[in-house]
Length: 343
Image 1 (tube, rainbow, N blue to C red):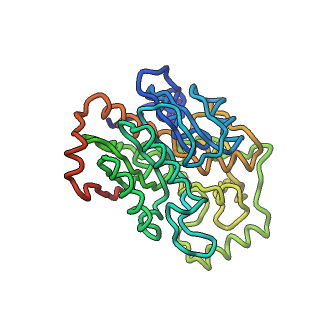
Image 2: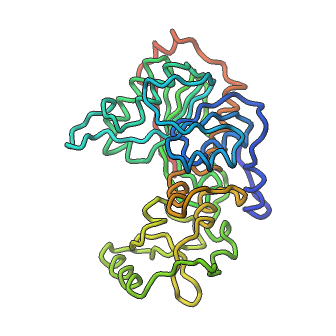
Image 3: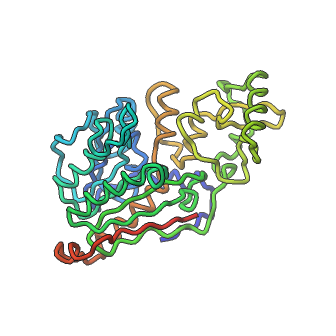
């Protein structure tokens, strides 16, 4: 389903992303973070059960969502609650400290946990998201993961999607991998592109009392950084376009790559947590818990909720309308998984 926003963007976000009482399936949300992915699914009516080891993230999740987030450190031996859907963003660390490729044997990696959950629960459909680097430097590892999950009788498809095509005011590419029993379709792109200026509104022209301004030395560093990196477009936020990708480093770090606003008087200031949250498509009523650095980290690591909502709508359609094929038929199909770039 494609959506058109005719009124104020943030008014639309604030209403569209309110969690709805259950009318869909139960979703197991692994490595849940602060709940960006779960928020998108709850806004469509799914019930979520979160698992996250960061206490601040769990508190944020439990403050804003209907589902409960369990503050636990997951291992592949963990026994999960029953659910029809499994989703998550497993941390990917397929390289050992010594630089050797250990894949699913690396203790820092989250994919063995995700695979174990799928094996335990045999969900009707599952999904994980990850950074685009999984397609390139770590492509061998993605192949290993998919092969393992395909052996459990799932068709596996994946796309590289840009959140800016799904009503998120940010260029944020993520690999979305979905395992299903046949008939799943990825969400259609929206015809609208939401700019940073439309999301921030007057906030981008103001200087809140707690603003953190760049010092003259930092301004000089920025100039040298952009010259040395042959930066064609300045790193100051362009209000006429979607923002560039938000990360923990460029939100909270005092670096030349920092996400920042340049005011009309020439001063530069760091984005506030709320501004960063808007660029991730979080509604204004969504409260982040913990200290400022923790909040920046939560925002930077999150799945953009409007992007998550588009995926959740495709999941709801699949569960309602698809006619799954048999496991025997799936076994006949080798190398079924497909990959598509979307820009």
